[in-house]
Length: 197
Image 1 (cartoon, rainbow, N blue to C red):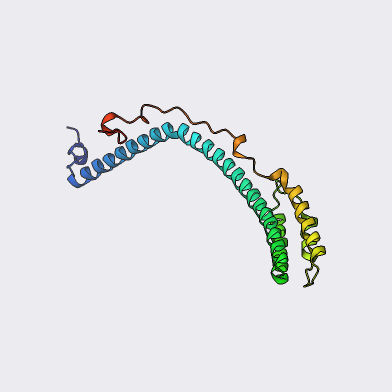
Image 2 (image 1 turned 120 degrees about the vertical axis):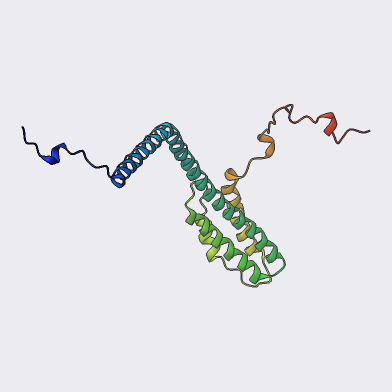
């Protein structure tokens, strides 16, 4: 007769709490594995789209920068044109013998030219000399305004000559072409409001 240990021959007693925990861990692990696989396959499918969106974003950023530079240039040109308009206003005030108002318009024109220079736009006219002369120009009250008018007119003509190449082109040079109407643009008889009954 052989002697065997009683612990080796006794079957393991089932532990329902432990079995439930093992099943739950396996179930959660399997769920997490499936979730990670679904996420990975979804991300792999979106890689091309993400790359295209990044390229499009770079193009849009370049376009935005070009538009910003164009806007700065246009604003600087606007300041220069406004300075020229103020010179005309100063001439009118000088003719009315409003010397203080005319002087004020000249100072404002000089300030606008300085603002245009600070923008550093490459498409603006070089009016540095005119801005300095505008700042130093003095219009004292006098009976003979002809010499003062000549000074302001000379500055105005110089500004006109410098600004002429930057002037906007007339609309006739830019032909606007509209596409032919499509079937969506043509009214249907039932919806035609122009039809007389």
